[in-house]
Image 1 (spheres, rainbow, N blue to C red):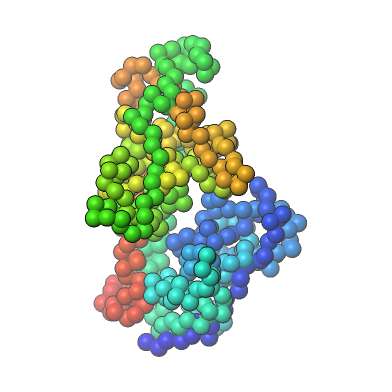
Image 2 (image 1 turned 90 degrees about the horizontal axis):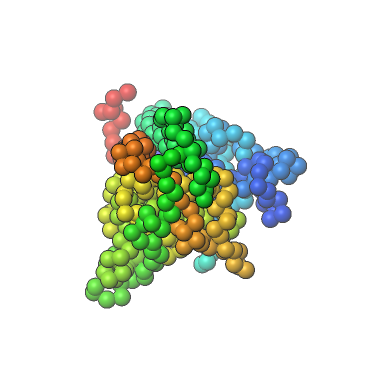
Length: 427
């Protein structure tokens, strides 16, 4: 299998240099480094520009099939544009163009770029101490395997089958989560639960609520509310234990089987005893750049998440961990925070410092926010359990998704290097 310099068959062009004044709260989405994750373009937390700016950057409008690569920070992250709609490309994200489609298949290039060996080369050639960078020229100088075109297409077909299964699992997870959010809003916010027509409303400090229900402050639902820790990169003594540290930026990857970026740190057992994550915990992002709007994002710790983290993990120091008395209400706490974020009410619980860092006021949140719950235990259980069942299904799907990703990632370098006999595989 011959090897060629990447630049001989494809070129890389960086995105448009938007100005800080261009950013808006809505408009045409702009794909930045953070939006290139694990083979997919994500619009979560993306920036926007208005139509006049978009017209000036029309040469950088993306189309389905475009292959992107991050050139700063997480060097070598690759994504392929699918059907996300109209989008523009920001600087420090590169886009590939194939020079000769009779020599290089676009799908094969996408998987070549995801080869850990090639990604390691990109990282090794990066420059810059504070934040690593790599140029289009340095990317093009790396070499790749180039089998005959029919072999390229066969390899890409095998790997894309896994990606289709992954996308299907992701869609199913989104549907289940949307169902859980809808049930929470209907039953615990608008009180349109089964049989609500026959239940009169009574006044409460939160407004009219169903008779036989009560508003319970979050702080009464919690066993504890603790800050995270950061630990150290090296053990300080023999008693220090290595653990995974989960940050707000890791929440989606941890929950949905993506690439784990959570760092390993060393933390003393005395601290680990009180900070080690458990099933039923809800981690809340506590402190981050105010413009990111991710303060108050949450991660629900279930068996799947804990297994992914290796059973011993802590939240980062800029997170808060809510631990309820009853694990069954953990999804409700998680959904309540999501409900507030969707209504932009989480800003009420933020203090923004002079440096632009927003801090989540966890104590105020726990004291002032309530879950309105039935007093009758059987009725409470009958309404909570369907939501818990949806999250159990989400966890099962996320576990399957993680296994699919793991299998694909094991196959990928073996297929690209020719270690696997393609003739022995079913068509």
